[in-house]
Length: 279
Ligand SMILES: Nc1ncnc2c1ncn2[C@@H]1O[C@H](COP(=O)(O)OP(=O)(O)OP(=O)(O)O)[C@@H](O)[C@H]1O
Ligand SMILES: [Mg+2]
Image (cartoon, rainbow, N blue to C red):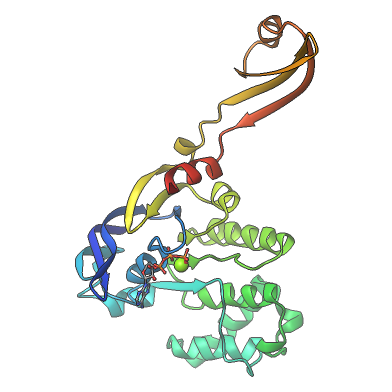
């Protein structure tokens, strides 16, 4: 089943096309990564999927429902967060979650339980009475993710979920995203500028540049896994450098006449692909 089915999506701002006919299929249950340089159209596209803005042309179905006809229904089944969380600053963690539970129309009888469940799932117990403006960036992001599950979404849109977090907190946040995905089996669509994050989390990836999808497929299709040995050696006082496909080491060494100075193992990663495709 498809979580998202988009065809020929176009969006214009002041006559300028920022999405120029995007086709995308996102399967239910996968983690799908939308990658691309600044201004490529990532936020615009996921905002359309989350029914926050409407496209000017094209068709989009979310969980089988047309975004033009059934936006209310879709909104109940999805949630979206951006990496720059903004909450009512003077409310505590618990009050904020309660507030959003109310906005999502969760009945009073189950609201308390839901909020407690999320506080516990995201290990926010210690901070439940701390005001939003007193939280660190990492905790704000944790609250942000907790909020995004308040309506038990079937699709979660994460717009740069680890932006501005230090490496340690970013790693924990990624793990949390992975855990949520495994535990709840929901579809996750994320945008990121961190290629490592995409490599670690995503099943499939699409590269978008200037409003067009320029490549998409399984993560493995982008990372060939082929290893290259870069060997530096010295002969007659001069340094030479050669690259070999990884293979039988004796065969490779036989080709080198001289003294090895350095060996590097290279592997094409998503960062290389991103740089190539962003040109
Ligand atoms: N409300 C708006 N009014 C006018 N132009 C807009 C609006 N929102 C986005 N744009 C423009 O649309 C283009 C795509 O923006 P978008 O935010 O979708 O890119 P992005 O891929 O999310 O970029 P980033 O990686 O920097 O977040 C940009 O040129 C941006 O300036
Ligand atoms: Mg963006």
